[in-house]
Image (cartoon, rainbow, N blue to C red; front, side, top):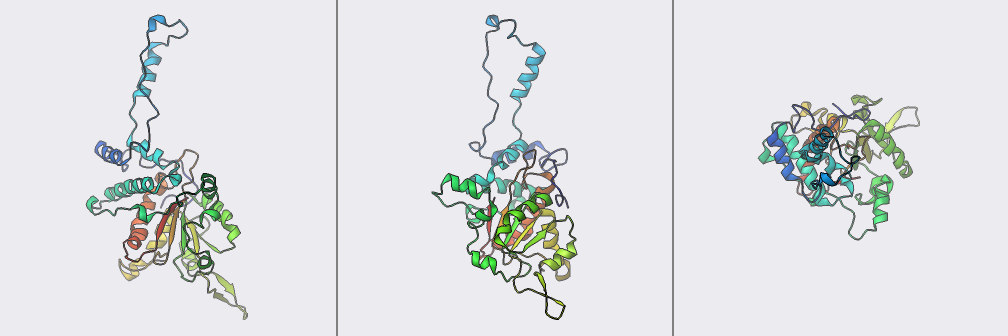
Length: 314
């Protein structure tokens, strides 16, 4: 599955055969993006009286045609989605919901799922900074993951004494293995073991064992598992989806995989942008896997009556 290693510069939903390949699909997606959320950078050009222009101001007609064609080109729904994803972590819960619902419903439609049966996210499913929070504090939290965690995580004490194997309290979904490593360094101040759930240098089998809990040496020279399990996991969508599905065939479609979200309380989408401005939600290599991870892991938990799961964007 894509997106497990270093960040790619491919775009999300681009090219022939992509999820937004048809005009009808483009129209449906465009209608879901709030016109007030994004404004086209191109405005109508005002006409000028060329008789009053100097010779230096007169532009050759061929250049005029090219420039006019570029300015008048409509903004595609693909571009709207890409632009909507930039800075989405600082937007309102309503904007985040509309953005994720658009991506999710379209991904499910392209996978052959009945669009009428698509789950619909609501603002209650998302964590947002409490009203009245100082803007400087908000900006600081969204630049420092260890500070940000104190918002969606309801108890730092439970985070440090987590005892549910295979189901971390916090799962952070990142763009690439490189970005995962960067975030782990930011969390080093918490002094907690962090499960590395990305493909680089780690096999699926190693991570299956990893999720069962840290191993420590015993007095007899052997090894035994610590009572404290991994409370935080950082990984890429492709590997998270693989671990979620791993072992399910042995127990049927309703069986539990190596990674489980039955006790998970926070799923964080790291919306860090790559060199071209794409994030984990909009990059072609990661977006599809992310939406299927949502379908198979997050949505079933949100549908439970007593679910404590919250989605957050960093």
